[in-house]
Image 1 (cartoon, each protein chain N blue to C red):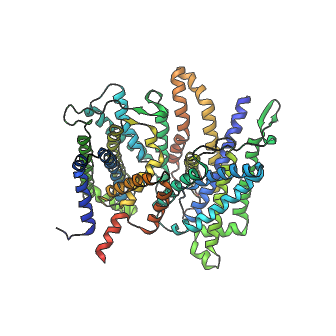
Image 2: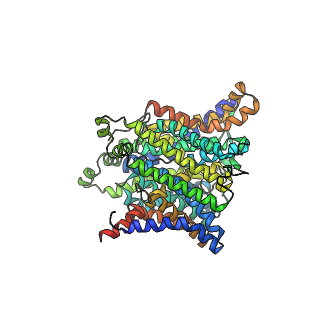
Image 3: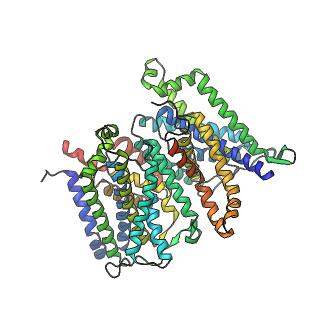
Length: 314
Length: 305
């Protein structure tokens, strides 16, 4: 075992808190906190998926919210057409996200740097307009999901606690997967590409192919978050894909600490709790949140994880 | 015929408006290497300032002039207080910081002007239809936008390519340290360039204001279009931004106007009327995708660094 560090302790504390939250909610009778944290866990999952390509792969996707929408619409549209089984809905959501990621990734990866940021942004915006044009599925107004995904008695998504634990299990599963990917040969190649693409190519790795596979995996993970999100809100609308949503995800990753395993989870928890807290404090919460982001960028490099890491050096 | 000419002019007008926005964006990026998502917020502020000042002074032109100065000033303050510290940092830091600024501006506008939109009424002499061809009239205001934007484009081109300041700006873009070593106040130069970019965004905003409502978040949709333009045109290239802006403005406007009818020729009426709006919104993104497949650096890439 490696030595004790502050960041490890805080991470462990946060994870324990996430696991024990339903118990607290039950004991205190505070139902709202469970609903809030279900949302937080789902968006943490999306942020973790973004971190896979952004933190490890160096690909700054500014269109990740598109997958939230695609996963969500897969559930919503199938439910609308009378297919309620989660065993069909979730695989379809994953497949649709993978397909979208494959096409978008193949096009976007031709570019790099700021071009990549803007391309992914523009394609997500395109997905947003497509969803707004789906008259049969609510168009601009969005689509109500009348019945949550049915897992034939295995888990009951209508039960708050069970649904929360399902989301948490998905989050932990995804983080485990990211950990395995990051430490696999494949992951090391992708990380190598982040630091020096030309050199990796010279060694003989087909750079774009590795990056594309990583891009698709990340998209599928975020699609899963989208499918969960539609179940959580019983509703899916184009607004989920709007570009400021992608910005939110990016903020969560950077706030928590890009390229760290638990950073995005930390970022999601802090960002969304802050949003919740500030919005209770004042209607104009973004007036405080905006400059706060600016200050974090200017003074808090490496995010919360980086900040916590500093305790050990002193 | 009448419709075609009118839509063509609409496309030109929209394209030129987009150019004003994209020029500022590409100038700031090309020269300072700063990704400014809050550029759309400056566009919004231009519109709000214009609506407010026009109401105070009772004159559209005076209001527009004051608004132009106000956005210029706002840009300078913004650069000096916040963005100056971001030069040389990672692009991701820019994205995050300027995303924070968007939140701030949207909320500040809500606080100051309230959640409802504003209107910027036109003076009577700008609302009259002007005959441009025998039997074809076109609104004077839209013609004015075309004239102003063309004039600004020309001045911008001459300013950047033919003046001493423009030379310094271009030199600063390729080597910041060298220009500083020659005894040029590069900090001031950057502040001025950013202010100019802000004023261009403000100009686009205030000119668009009488056509649309002035509302919160109005800069966000159009900012994405500006991004598409500078990606198609090649980042950092004013000429690329100009041509791509007109191209995108045309495609977007003509697509919206004629696509429904074209689709109706091949699809059933109901299917066409559902597909057309989505397809015409997607059109420019499709064009962008095609451009990138052929030319990943855009159509007119600026000098490579």
